[in-house]
Length: 396
Ligand code: HCA
Ligand code: CU
Image (cartoon, rainbow, N blue to C red):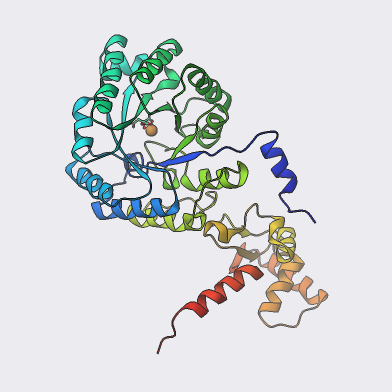
């Protein structure tokens, strides 16, 4: 038999050559903008280490928020991590100075360019915005910094002005441009068209920063890749301003399995990363959250149990261990004959078709919904668990 995902894979990569898409994680910047999130300096350092070990390409953090943040940025930069540390601030010389004082090599500057941002937030004209954008890039470059420029609210800006500003900052030497859908108003094809316009106007590498206000963030991030972006912004569990941005788990798994992007992610850290955020913020991911949710690998209906007990791939796109999750089966009124017979075998009861049928009927008659949940490891997982046990030093 072919790999269970063989034909689906053919649809996914249809005529496309996989290209490498990078990840910038902004848990320490966008993530801290989520209501109720505020990390300590130590927590920020630990999160940065873990993100680096996981394999993201860039880690974004803002030193301009508070002295505390500045201290974290300085310390994280000193660690010499593999990922670039991107010091985020407004498109102002004074913010670039803060990044310089942290010894940053990379900075990011954002400036609202839609009419509403210019008029009602910044209270400046388009000409003044243009001057500020170019001035900021030139200032950063003249101080030896690499700079990403974010045309904030770009999806709602006049395309003519958007392209004019992109061309001008490219001329000034910008290293990357972030094309954001700041209020999450685009649908995937809209995001594609938006990015395509910018892609055709400039050669600078592009970042996709997309918000999830209507639930399209993940789809829009990948539509942006199809249009020429080569870096996606994420946060752990997707936390961020309002409804946040795409989650690191979903993006990294999609890149690896659906897009075949050659990244080097330690996907088995994903659930631990999610748990870490839960511990530091008391924000609990909802149980059906893809990849990391507690229900992401639970199987319940009798027909599903029957298949899973023979081959879990029947109802799983990717094995749970690969992403640090665990498979569980739920026994209750939906368990069916196969489920009941499995339950009987682990309870050490002699089973036959007739008694399994009776137990299944009994579970239904109880009308108590789910009764118990059990972990279900496959052969390979059992082997790994046993090896792990063996590796542990014996206690005296
Ligand atoms: C913000 C706005 C921003 C910036 C994105 C970026 C957005 O909160 O500063 O710098 O790429 O959504 O536009 O998060
Ligand atoms: Cu944002």
